Length: 184
Ligand SMILES: [Fe+2]
Ligand SMILES: [Fe+2]
Image 1: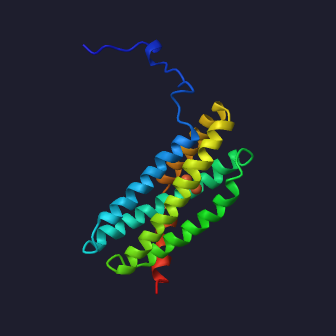
Image 2: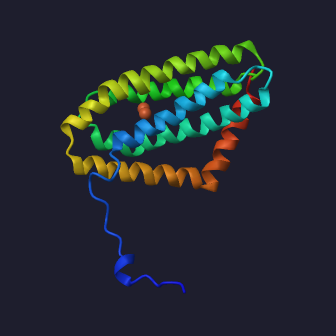
Image 3: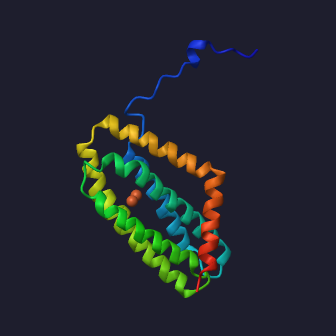
């Protein structure tokens, strides 16, 4: 016979601060997703342009969403804590431009490999050197823990919303198509 759980066992306690992810943890985990896609792209040979293109599309969408959650949620929340935010905005523009150059490149060409190499360097410089080694430790040191987990929740929620939004997916598909149409 199936046992019915009592109402008491179904009441779930809210997770403690320690169980929730901090903002910097959410962002580092998303950096790992971006780095993983770059790695996969670098390991996929020119003879597989379809796979390279699919990975590029995924990278385009994930990096676009990463910039959105940082610019809309994280940077405004911590801008008084670290001076590193000012430079981060222009670094995002640089990343966006380089990502566009990669999308425009023919995946079976040598140029694609060059653009991928530049994107890798720009991403390491921004996400690892500037954010993970400089900005994030400063934020973790000076922001209180409650703010860090509140912002972490907001970042995760926003990322999940963007990923599951049909409207955003359609917009990103259109953006990629327009970039490829203007490729030289
Ligand atoms: Fe960033
Ligand atoms: Fe980032």
